[in-house]
Length: 128
Image (tube, rainbow, N blue to C red; front, top):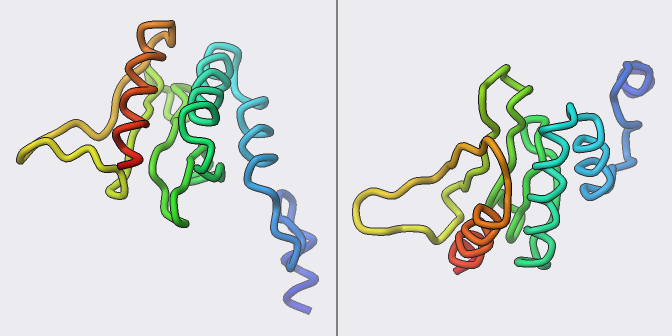
C-alpha cells in the first residue's frame, strides 16, 4: 500500500523503474529559462565530448556527472537560487588539488569559446 501511495505522488517515478540519468538531465535542462538552458546545454556538450565516460544524473535537482558512482562535476542554473550567475563546480572526487588551496566552483555569466576551453581543461584535469 505504501508503494502505491509513493507511486501516486506527483513527480515521483514508479517504484522499481529507475529513470535514465541522461533523460533526466536533458529534461531538466530543457525546463530551464532560456539563458540558463543555453549555458547548461553547452556545458553538457562539453562534458560529453571531454569526458564521455562520465555518467549524467540529477544531483540536488541540477545536472551532474559522475565517475565511479560519485559526482565529479555539476552545473547549477542561476534561476535555481535567483542568483546573478550560474555555477559549475567540482566535488571531492575531482583531481584538482593545487597545494593547500584551489577553487572548486566557478561563476558563469556567459559561456563562450574562451570559457569552454577553460572548462574542457578543468574537466580533463579533474578526471585525473
